[in-house]
Length: 260
Image (cartoon, rainbow, N blue to C red; front, side):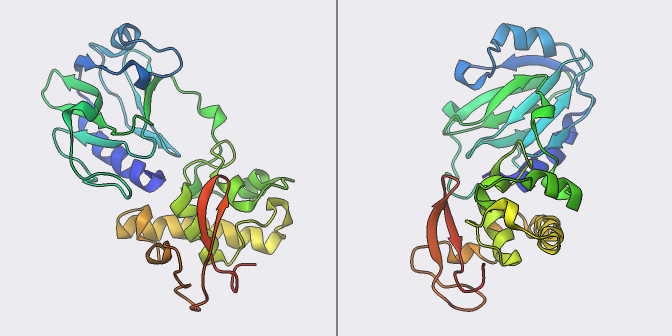
């Protein structure tokens, strides 16, 4: 968290600052500036520049500027966006609802008024200039069968680990992948290369439809499996005890009866 659904909500909120001109940059936390970026270099790139657009690829929010720079915003596990003092997401799953001023890691103010801020308690997000989107896979919300087949490739890694790899497929996190695989009835530990063409087509459809459904519901935490993501819980479909394992470094819930 946040996953692509939440970052798309942030992107939509950031549309409000398109056409505004940056009058002030506040980047008090040097750790939050990535790839050797300094506050001075960041200021030189965006001060006096107009925000031209708000775009997204996977979990990366991008804001092209009239200066030619592209501001890249990442939110890690606990980052939230605030625009003009309002947050499109008041609370993330597994994160605090309150807002401590010390958690404001980055802020833009505008000539026309208002501001855009990142609030991140755990400092796992970041700000960069001219992010290299070529390192990201296709966006999961629109992934095609051919793109998914290429992402899976001949990898012997667990299916869940491959779907979490942002270089292969951009935007999915732990909650979405567990929900997608549960809906697809696929074992998270199954080798990615073992899916046959029918399973690949079904998985691509499930990725797109799950993102659509959970977007309408309001977030990656609104899946049907979510209520069962606790030790000792049962499958919401068949009532079999769920497996709780670590796959791809993440706590994973799956149904041993239905997911094969």
